[in-house]
Length: 340
Image 1: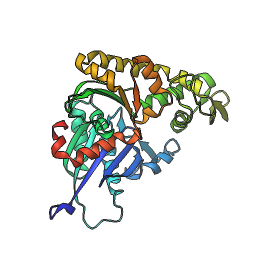
Image 2: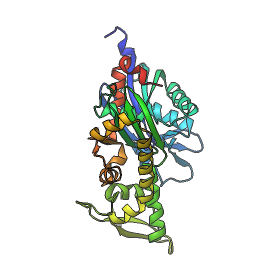
Image 3: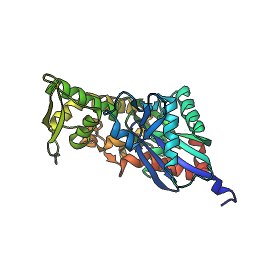
Image 4: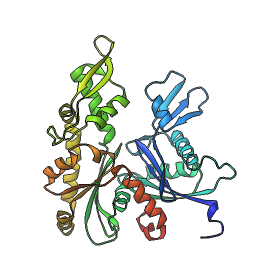
């Protein structure tokens, strides 16, 4: 340990569309929704993360809530910068004597453009980072679930986040072929919102649609251990009066069918592009599912039926990417070649 090591703070960030996670000293120290509440008149940030999420959909005209990331990339530059800065402050709330210089590893979608990459880098630098390294999400997910990415063995990783679904075949420390599509957790929430509006004439907020996805979301209309029906409240579109309806998982499975089919298509496309030697490896190792979307009931079974391959859901799939980013940060010299 060097003399001035305490002057540098090393952090790994999973900058997600839905949630942002930060690892410091091998521990997840921040796990907050990626959302910022801003005062419209002064432009000041009022709240970040969970507190801002509680305001989402309930604000008056002087406050607006912003989700700085859309489809896995930064859509609002200033809000993203504020969010990163505030979340870094959450790491050690008591210390304000001096700000250590920051060394960051941030994960990015594999289908990202150079301009979008630049935006992530600039936001991190404006938030106080001296050194910024970027790593692709499927690569970070593979490292996070314990795959040795440097081996000449093919592994297929599917990371279904909030904004993007990343499908990648990894071997020899590189991504051999990948598909990045902008259909993921947020798309599922939208599908549910749309379905409730069309089928039940009920208007829901984004958070209520998200609750339905978590409580009764399913990828198959028939499950071995189904979740209980779920009561949800919203506004009746005919009368304008608040009302309650009960939804079951079979309905939600139908609502999500189209989006899940898009993900299946992308998986098939990635498998078609895979070199035959790696296809032989994937037949043995199967497919690894990570990200919040991996928690959707029956999704592993549905992908398995479609591809005829074994599908393994990572343990704690929500944190697989950030764990991998943390490992890459700790072994930065070893994994530097992975960082675009």
